[in-house]
Length: 143
Image 1 (cartoon, rainbow, N blue to C red):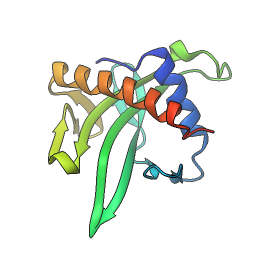
Image 2: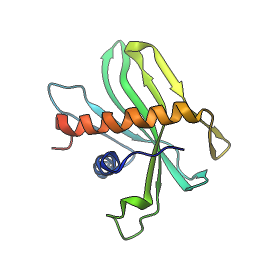
Image 3: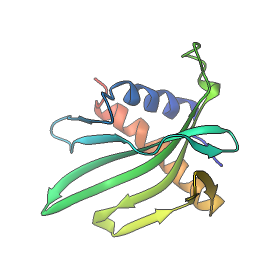
């Protein structure tokens, strides 16, 4: 499984700090709102237990339009050393972009275990997520 680079990992961790409960929506006019939702907990992976999150920019057009939405698996083994980002592993698991009619999933849940179905697609999703998270930061979503 491919994981976010360090810069994107730090940005994602800063986004997660904004979470109050199971979800939070960050607004940044004139851009679309950014929604972060905690999804499934205690998922088994070969790197440790993961928490799944869905992160998306969205707008309404009768239905919620995700532009895009990325699902992430987060394995956090930092303990008290919160700045030890080498022990925070974050991987992209799926990509959905409603305007492009695109839905790709590179992993699957088999019971409570995360399994990579398509390693090349998962690597592509993570590479896209690296750039997307950096762009979100540059656009001011964490200001």
